[in-house]
Length: 70
Image 1 (cartoon, rainbow, N blue to C red):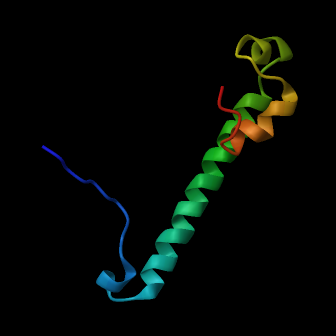
Image 2 (image 1 turned 90 degrees about the horizontal axis):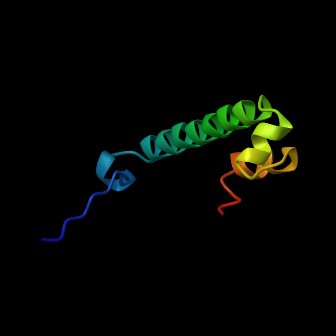
Image 3 (image 1 turned 120 degrees about the vertical axis):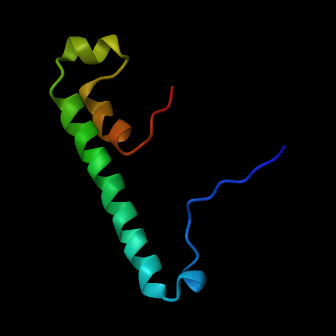
């Protein structure tokens, strides 16, 4: 049996474009905050600990931005 799950809202169905803009801003803030927390957590690790997980200090920004998938 096939099913479809979607959490996106359609501004035309909600009655205003402002709601879509609001949800977009909230989503971007959540993404930014996740990257900030990741960057802070990785920055607190030692070089040895980063090496254990296959990273170096130069990789932190890339990982926090969602890149560097190995």
